[in-house]
Length: 308
Picture 1: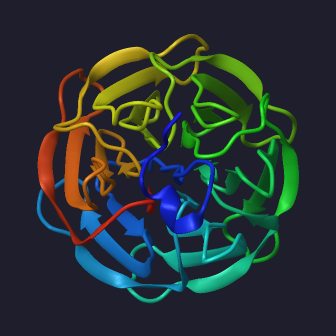
Picture 2: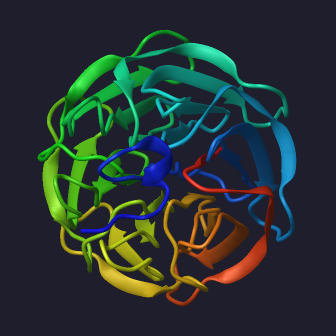
Picture 3: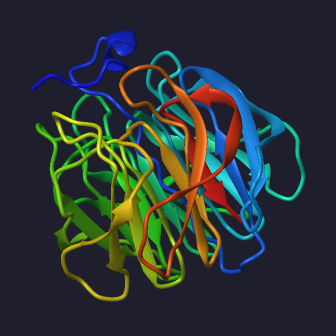
């Protein structure tokens, strides 16, 4: 299988970050996009409006292929490639532009991770730690400190995407040792191993993931042969296979997403012919194709994002 061109930078057998996007519990929400190939830049947007992103500040270190999640007030960026496996967790106060601050460390360096969060706890599936890892770490978002082991995924894999309700997190897709369609779920407030949720409509990795309070979205990604424009959705409270939601404006991967309680944004990525600055949006509770929102301040791929 021939994987996308970004792997050439890393000398890897596969490549892309997963990101988790964290859905906020209120509608008037700020979305934050950080890092990417390979930079420390953080942008923000107001999800309820359309328009171009604004500079927020910088990560503590430039990196890509990492996870992002948030509470209503604080956002975390975890792990990544910079230019080796990183265990760094950064945090920002979402309402206040400025540079990120060191939060603590994951249990080990990783990249290709995915994250999800409740109002209080953030969980990161580590991805690649030297092999495809099943390990999930968690932190209490309101306090700083090192991560603690949460449990294991059903299958070790990297470049997954995450989404969540207030109580349940879902990790979808990934690469292990080929691109798959697996979705796992966890109860965020407890620790323990993930349980099979169902399957995506197509085998994909390198997707964007985000959610409303009830519906999870997995958008775009790479199938092993094409950059996908497919948007899938699930009802997070139930288990079962994903359903087609609509299409992105163009097939792309290495992208990421964030959301309010009603609207989801998908930003950055690549079509295989250069990096993108495009942000698209959907209304999560309806079905349909994505619409142009505006632009990131700089084109990038392999970024992470979240919302408050």
